[in-house]
Image (cartoon, rainbow, N blue to C red):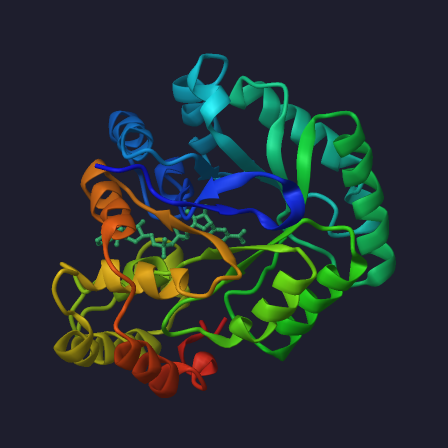
Length: 320
Ligand SMILES: NC(=O)c1ccc[n+]([C@@H]2O[C@H](COP(=O)([O-])OP(=O)(O)OC[C@H]3O[C@@H](n4cnc5c(N)ncnc54)[C@H](OP(=O)(O)O)[C@@H]3O)[C@@H](O)[C@H]2O)c1
């Protein structure tokens, strides 16, 4: 199989696979336990498919440690663009801890730098933001990180979320923002052109809506375990009913699953540098990576998805 295409990561000078690997599920926390053997197989499947962009965080359970074992130190490290995140820096008091969290990540990842380091909980207060970014810039000068990102919080994508993206872009001090962008939650698309013009890379997450859009959950089912229990039963029912409808017109060959359609949707805007797709096993990784070889979605389908879901982001946000 051909390696997935690459896109520039904003103004960073780095080119990254348009299909990235979201390493939260393999950490064994957010989506329930994952055996280490399966986590390793998932990473290997991603690398075998030619991917070079991996997204992890200090808070993703065993994710960094397993990545460190597979990639750290050795030859593979040179081909991978590694992104991690710190939970520190949301308040003035925790800003000094950004450095110690990064150092712990580097130790566990068995590397001396990461290419991209995000504020996982980027502060809204502009004064705190600027102080946190001062700290990130020092780490960048020291070569411990190559680019600075803000992973915009809020599974509930609202006007405030869009405003926060704009605030970070306008700071002129972040190279990348990571955002929720999917068929169901398109709202952040409003700032894509602006980010692109400013040279800020967009990393899009949760294209499959944490599995809800994969097509394997049917109306009537309700996921009560793991982080997905934040979506109430009513919202889950609404989503699974819409996905069943979607399948009737959106799942067109050569696409084989709704998961593939969902991933491709998030990849369509040119401002998106990469869609980071989470997976719990190698089969899911391969199915998701196959999207790289598929043609763009048909124009009429894209238009329909934009018309039907574009204005309804808030209907699919978690309620708490
Ligand atoms: N605040 C933040 O910075 C933040 C927050 C969330 C995520 N992220 C990052 O973004 C990445 C992507 O988000 P995500 O992993 O939460 O969500 P996602 O990519 O939308 O969905 C991942 C889940 O979907 C299911 N899945 C994946 N591929 C599938 C396939 N081909 N067929 C059927 N089901 C499939 C799996 O769960 P099941 O098999 O259990 O259904 C998997 O755990 C994360 O891994 C993480 O790196 C960052």
